[in-house]
Length: 219
Image (cartoon, rainbow, N blue to C red):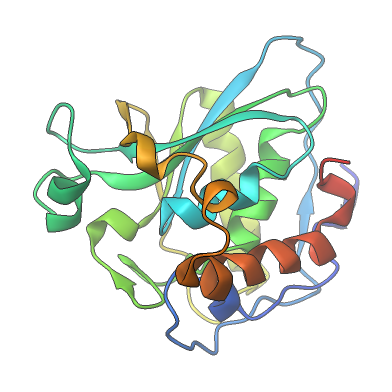
């Protein structure tokens, strides 16, 4: 199988954590992952991914070519129809996630995971920067055996090549539920880009995304 670099370089993951806490975690620029074959199926596929604050995750995935829709919400819990307050209290078991609808002819699931692992720290359990709690855990809720296999392969390669100084703790879990977050959480960065949190935390992520994954962005 042909092997090509998945990242030209990675930035310090502190820029991609939702909080402002500094971290020394970096990813090696030499990390390589065997590419999987792009499917020719015309139907859309869905990925459910958690990487900290869903405002940040949403802003990143919305800008990828092939992504049709991104919805912020909650997955992996045991309470029906959870509220944001309950999820933040840690009483529902849910993670903040984004449900990404994408065209596999333009963007593969592995492509999504490349961006996913580049834009958060998957080695810190239940934490991204200053955001702490089980709702901020790194998580992949797979929807098919193929998604599970791809996720496990990517994690295995990243760990073997020591892309991060610490082992990846991302949960790879069978998808069991998704509840869309409250309306004010949807399309948050695009509608509130002038707010302090967006300018300080999310905007630098978006700019770094444009530099690292220029070829994957919408025109």
